[in-house]
Image 1: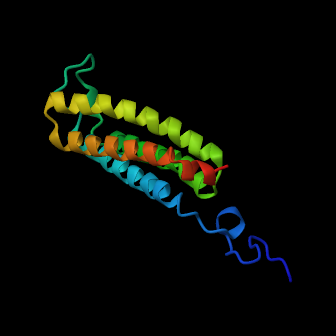
Image 2: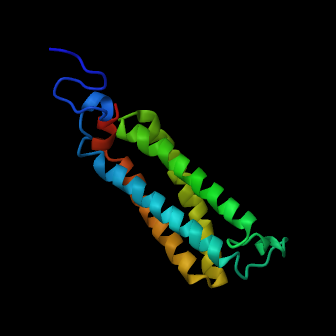
Length: 159
């Protein structure tokens, strides 16, 4: 039998862990990671488009860099790129069954839930319904992510 780079006997080229399929226990976590990224991006775009809202603060001119200005578009693009990079730092190692991706995902997801709860309160207190609903969805998705990540079957796959 000849050896082909990136392929193990019975495996597929370029697949996780030398061609082994992603275990069924890990698939929901990977899907939730992608859903969380999509909701995060959507929430970020909506928040950038709707502006800071009527929340009083120390910086009255904070809304100057709106999404239609070049600076606002650059900030939005940078934020979306950073978001995608952070999600890739979790998704790709998880897909490859690397335990450090799971640990990083738990840390980032827990921090996101804490921050999103604060954002949710700000949106609700300021009467910003759409960003509030999206943030509520994000809290829900990320909470489910944490629950699924803690399943024994998921932890067993990542050992």
